[in-house]
Length: 124
Ligand SMILES: [Zn+2]
Image 1 (cartoon, rainbow, N blue to C red):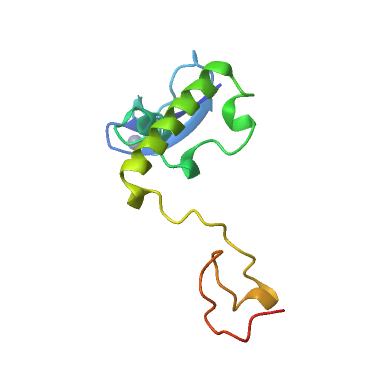
Image 2: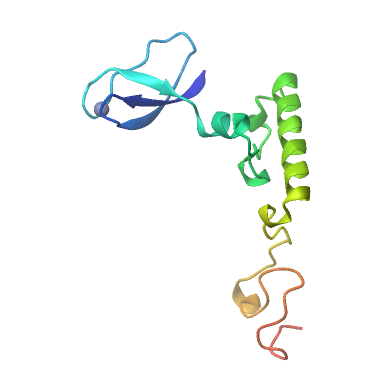
């Protein structure tokens, strides 16, 4: 099974999950024939800009059960992204951990290391 991004001639886009060999469904909006378009992840993997960590699989299932080839590809992508961020630190964004920010922590800084917005009112 795989997820496909499909598009019809009229430009309707939708996703289906089906086997590799199943025929592509017609467009659910207008009934026209559809074709595959590269998935966002595949696009990002091939593009000159490797995807940021947030776009990498976050779960065991996301790696197809740690499929060796897939994980090796992910590692290459992650290394390419790390190299890119070393050359262009502005792409890395703010990677500091987000702190608890609810309830009595509402007034505390969002990120570790941020100055407290109202010193003295921070919880003990
Ligand atoms: Zn359509």
